[in-house]
Structure formats: C-alpha cells, structure tokens
Image (cartoon, rainbow, N blue to C red; front, side, top):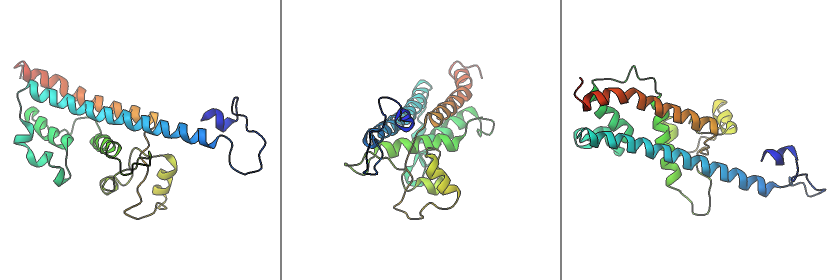
Length: 199
C-alpha cells in the first residue's frame, strides 16, 4: 500500500486516460487483508483475556456466573468483563478504582471481537461496529481516522443502519494489549495471595 501510494517499483503507474488510480484493486485487497488481520488479532486478544479469567476462576474454585448472574447477563448489556470484574472484585475486596486499566477500552475489545466474529453479510469482508456500540461508546476506539473526524465534527450520518467500520490499527492493537496487561498485572499478585492463603 505504501509503495502504491508513493508510486514506487513495481507500482509505477502506467499511462492511462481512464481516471481510475493505478493498482486500485491491489491497494484495496491489501487494505482488506490488514483489516481482517487486525480484527483477528483483537478477537484473539478478547478470547485470551476470557481464558485467563476462566483459568483463575477454576484454579480458585469459584463459580462466578452462578454468584453474579446479573453482571454476566448479556440481556442487561453486560458480559464476561463485567461479570468477572464483579466476581474478582468481591474476592479481592476492590472496587477497581485503583486499577490503572481503562475498562471502557477493555469492553470495546470484547465488542470488537463480537462484531468481527458475527458477520452480517456473506459477500462482504468489511467489518462494522455493531449498532449498539455507539450507544455505549459514541467514539469507538477501533476506528479509522476518516470516520473519527466525521464523528468529532458531527458529520457522521445519524442513521441506526449506518455504523462505522471496525479498524484495528497497529497502534490501537498495541494499546489494547497494554490495557489487558494492566488488568492482569493488577490481579495477579492478589490472586496468588488468595490461592496460597497469604491474605
């Protein structure tokens, strides 16, 4: 994509009078590949976080969903992050106020995974945010610069059927990874203390 934009070899544009940019198809294919790769990475991150929390639940002999059903309830707009946050918060006697992680971003990792894994069209590889995402997060974290500017300047179409594209850039992915690591680092030592009776 960079070489096409810079017209570098082997993408020097040939003479043409049709007005269509040279190598447009190659550029679009590469862009789609990047978007699918980013969505796959954030999906794996969400699933890894879930497995991490499930593993601690098993190791400690907890039954989080049984004891905190409302916090896990998708019908109430919650999910596994809210559920495990309540369960482990109760165990560790914390309200998470001193946790440095951004839980709004953590929630968006899971929402991005859900959007990426539940395609709406069989003929389109383009992934959009679920319509419920902007209700909770008016400025989604996983967004391209163009649509971000549209939202910031109130130019984004205000239709329930028009949702921004889910775009996971390298910078966004690395920040998402950092936030998940912050949650894990916050929990790790206190959970080992519980496991080995050091509390």
